[in-house]
Image 1 (cartoon, protein in one colour):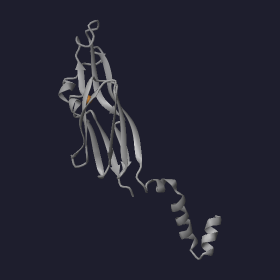
Image 2 (cartoon, rainbow, N blue to C red; image 1 turned 60 degrees about the vertical axis):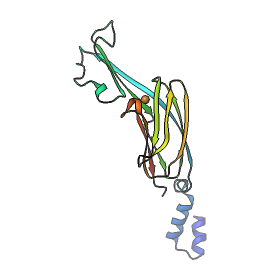
Image 3 (cartoon, helix red, strand yellow; image 1 turned 135 degrees about the vertical axis):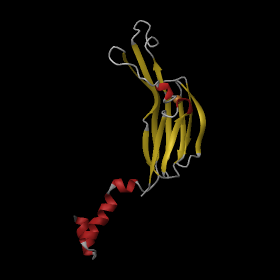
Image 4 (spheres, rainbow, N blue to C red; image 1 turned 180 degrees about the horizontal axis):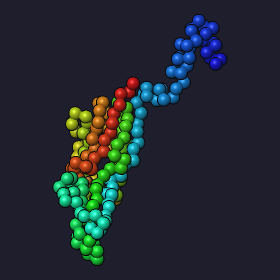
Length: 175
Ligand SMILES: [Cu+2]
């Protein structure tokens, strides 16, 4: 209030003075002004589910035909001691989506928990390669870094488990 009064004394109408103060003091707005570096931790994981054919019939379409990232163990394959059990799984990146602003630097640190091998690359919103395909092995940690020059969606994909093992980096306008 004191600052408002001071500005008013300078001859600036109070409504404008308040707007100026809000713009100067709002941390959310000032954060968007200069590019920043986002350190993002990601894991390559496999989630699993299973049930008994007594409770639910296995799917009529083999999940493996839908994505290389899906796995299916039919009754008889999943558990030799339980011939009715069937299981499914899916490889994924966690988190699967992050948002940054244009011009920000993405510093990604990825740890491979599941799957012995993944071939991973990053493409920009126009499909151009930003990070060339690299082999990631289980139990290792990998780092990659790039500047988000373009607006839109950058894609981190694994060719071994396409199309579902993918993560998106949404690039928003700087403001
Ligand atoms: Cu993979």
